[in-house]
Amino acid sequence: MVLVSSRPLPAASEADAEHDGKFDPTETIMHHIADAHSFHIAGDLSLPLPVILWTEKGLVSFSSSEFHHDNQGKHLSQPHKGMRFLKYHNEIYRAGEEGALEMNQEGHPSNQAPLDFSITKNVFTLFLAASLLLLIFIPVAQGYKNRQVPKGLASFMEPLVLFVRDEIAQPNIGPKYVRYMPYLLTLFFFIWIINLIGLVPFFPFSANLSGNISFTLTLAVLALLVVNFSGNKHYWKHILLPKPWWLAPILLPIEILSNVVIKFFALMIRLFANITAGHIVVLSLVSLVFIFRSLAMSAVSVPFTLFIMVLELLVAALQAFIFTLLTALFIGQAVDEAH
Image (cartoon, rainbow, N blue to C red):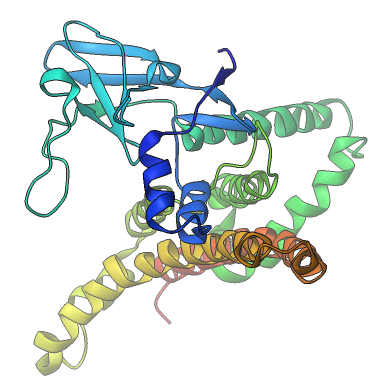
């Protein structure tokens, strides 16, 4: 990867003119919390990431630095297998004749969109968080092979592991908690690390992965599978054969929706909304300086921003705890024996 310079778009200049040169906080905030095919470093410098596309002509890969701006302000790539690609609102489309981007009546691109397997900021952060987990826990696990008393990094991690065991797994799952500890530990530390990565505003961090609905949806689906595949006979009998039997036509859809949709939809939205809200609040406070065009406003925005950032450190751990706690609670309901 190499650092590249991205020059302002003519189209962006025209948009600024239409807004009489006023700062648009909505566009800036949405740009910062959205996924992207490159990391912004500073000023005009950015770090391109690999673009990997599956087209009708097979696999196409190139650096996102190839998305140069033409004289009409479009992000257009170099030709690959006789095809050129356009980037519009961080989505990649097959370019039409002469690099055209066609719009339908609703104002959405009608160009063909290839399957995008690119290494974006969020994907990079996913790999980074997984690597950090391995770098932390493999040495900790190896340290216990030769001694029972924790030392170094293990002495720091052991209270956290015991916290997940004693405060999350055991009280909510019961005697069968041991088989679910690897999943719950991975879930807790994975979400926590990703949340912390999103709070650091510079490369190689700064991606808003926990604020991506696709990521939280994936975590919720994994929890759904673990819970329902762990369900015992009593759990499924309670769902499929509700009592009293004459209310089954009403209770059966409610039980199915509750245990298959609503619980896990709430898991998905809670993590997504809380992390995204924190990023929006911080960026909104910083934007006050540019909205009012006054350095005096920094006397208000900077202290409040620092306060929210410190609060976000708590929220990062709290959201990992809540997601893991609710997952353990749902597992406990699925494996609980009939009284």
